Length: 279
Ligand SMILES: [Zn+2]
Ligand SMILES: [Zn+2]
Picture: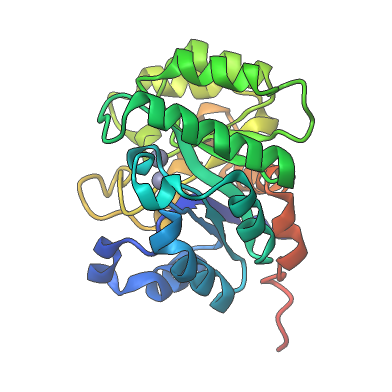
């Protein structure tokens, strides 16, 4: 099959995307740049489940997740979802291919540390139950992330799979994660001029663990830095990652898309080959 890219983490329902035409326009623009797959990520189950599943349902090769962002971990409507609820919601829709984004964010602390930890473990348990991978958001909480993952069986329980999304932590976190089987996804930050340290970390992540993402509408890569980000721009991050690994952009596209389907393997069930559409 021809090489193509997948944006493994975007927020197609975000208010800011209305300025650029909304989710449908963003999907069309991505596909015109050969970004053939998109995973749109849940932050609040109560508010987003219907919207995200509807976006995923009306586009080929757009998938979504179910889960609560660490920022929103203390929200009563989110606390109310049990492991069983998340499992049921995840199984209810063929295009829900992952759980999250969950994790810990001690930089903003929009929710309490205890609330975030409880929510993180709840999501991990839903992953083990469903076999779906966890999308992990980590900021200023590396030690707790690693410790909780270890306690919950990451690396020993084959049902537990995960990705560090928008990786921006240190080399040690990357190494410990990779040792436990975690995938590492790089965003537009990789392309920033001063990101030599991050590029060095990316160089040491094994090829079979690499993913690319935009986290749009945040963090537009160079040369769009400062503008609103969109899934089409994942091309810049992938090109940068290819250079870091001394590969061609096509080779890196093939590698990261293969990794995407290895991790989010439920997405294979609904994959529509974009190069074999009826003439
Ligand atoms: Zn995040
Ligand atoms: Zn996100």
